[in-house]
Each structure stands twice: as C-alpha cells, then as structure tokens.
Image (cartoon, rainbow, N blue to C red):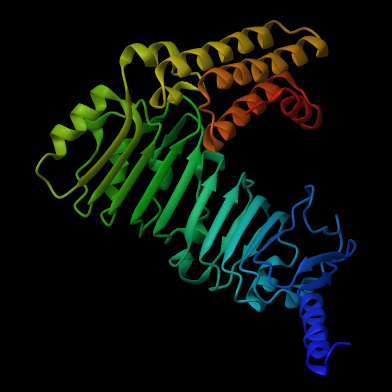
Length: 357
C-alpha cells in the first residue's frame, strides 16, 4: 500500500502533466497545445492551429500560451496588430502574403515578410527603428514607407535588385542581400552611398557585382561576399587591403564554371565537391530539357521523378546531400514543378517517393 506521501507525489505528477497542455480555439475548432509552446503557426497549412477563413478571430486565446514568443501569420491583419500589442511577450512575427494595413506594437522586434502584397501599409513605432526586418520576394524589393528607419534589413530577392529601391531607408546599419536566382545583379550600386551609417554589407550570390562601382562607405567595417567570381574576389581584396573593413569571402568560382552553370540551382554545390556538383548540375540540365519538351502530365511527372531519382543516385555515390543541400534540392524541384504547372500536392508526394537523401 502506497504511503500518503507517495500518493501525494503521484497526484502532483498527474496534475503537473495535465497542466502542461491547454486547449485553444481561435474560432475554427479546438487544438491541444503545450502551455509552454513558444512558436504558433496560424497559416492555412497542415499541422497549424486552425483559423477561421473569414470573420472574427478569438485572439484572447493567446492568453493560454504565456511563453509564446513568435507567431507565423498569413493574409490580412484581421486584428493581429492589436493582439500582439496585448501580448508583449510575442516579439517575432513572420507574415506571409501580408496585405492591407498593419499597426505593429513596439514589442515586435523581428519582422519577416514573405511575398508581401504591393498595397501593404505598415505603421510601427519610430518608423521601425527597433525592428530587425527580413523580406523575401517583395515587389521591386520595396520596404514599406512605415518602416523606413529600420537599421537591420535582410532582403532575399530574385536575380536582380536595385540599390535605389532602398534609398529611402534613412538609418540603415546592416544590410544583407540574398539573390535566390541568377545572375545576382545589384544595379545602381552607387546609391548605396546614401547609407552613410552602414557598418555591415553582406551579399549572397551577387555574381554580377561590379566591385569598382561600390561607393566609399565611411562607416563600413564588415563586408561579406558569399558566392562570387574569382576576379571579383581579387578586386575586392586589393581595394580594401590594409583598411578598416574586415572581409569574409567564400564560394569564389571561375569564369569557366559560371559560364556553364550560372543558371543552374546546384552551381554552388561545387564548394562541397566538384565531381559531386558536376553530376548534380548535369542531372538538373537533363530534367530541365525534359520539362521543356513535356507535352502532357505524364511527361511532366517523369521529368520531376527522374530529377529526384538522379539526385538520390548521386547521393548514394557521394553521401553529401545534408540538410542545407536537401532544402536546395527541394527548392530547385519545386521551381521546376511550378514551371510545369504541377500542383504542390502531387509534386510533393513524388519527391518523397523518389528521395533517398
């Protein structure tokens, strides 16, 4: 027979376990979550907390998650800004397809905008001075005017962007530009001279950067080139030799390699292994040719499946596709599927069926 103390400990343990979970219902059905959950995904995707497609959202349910620090949202505001103001512990907001007007409280310190709509209007205290802003696939790389005092910006764009699009940012100190496609062209480079407070400049995949066009930036102390030409690396090292700017340059590639593979999504795999990258790039070229010749859904499916099968065989030989490269493989595959007009659901299923990495 258990002692009174053992029984008490057992009851306390049960209660403590039960208290770990709460049920929240934003208006589209209940979901059981850990009370201490820190991230809340409210997008219309699998495994997210359901939100009504229209009508009011019961934001008071956030009271049940005292440790929540980040929210992933999609679409118009629908009371989101007021909800964040009422829950100051939420400091990170990731927002897909942001539209309409958004009034952000001072407690939001990191904001990620993915595919914001052109009509988005944002208001933030001090015009976003305290916000670490990250944007991807924004129309013409336009930062909303209501955030023109952001000091930290990470912009992920396609194959080209104009520095003039950022000219209205008055307090910029740290800028990172990531080119998600070829050729990686930064136009109107002299416009960077406007940012006389810029301490750090980071360029990912800027293969068409003209180093001679970089203006003198008096506050610059840190320059990163991740993915560049060997000739660009040499010119940059010569220009900044002996000065106050610390350089970090990686992934410099020859003109010969880039002439053959600049448009290939696996071009940077050469930084891991040249034979491995050559086979991966060749696999993508075959898939792209098959996709271009596809005239029916069956041919499109064969092209997509073959790409994943080829990458699986390549990984069987080299065992080099880690988490990062797997994500790049998925992005390349997804881009090819989109070009073929294949819906996401069957394309994702084919990827998983063929994948061995």
